[in-house]
Length: 116
Image (tube, rainbow, N blue to C red):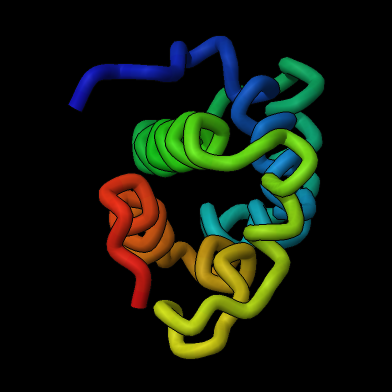
């Protein structure tokens, strides 16, 4: 996997997660950190560890893929709307549980024109 996020850029990933409808609290749950930790990363007063950085990179990839596939005005709505392919769950809920690969897979299906 190509590195898409520099160690000094967690604030960019946090902003992109907000664009997807993922609150700081949900992002903290996704990364298994305290919401205050997310705030410190956004402010630049702390840096994510390697595990969190890898997850932030995956979130960046999800954001990039979704941004290519969806209009900016529809981006957040897609993540906050129940999705049949995800068992009727919202993609944002899956992300908040750390199920990044499932959401990425659904976006990949959408990219290839596979609708279920």
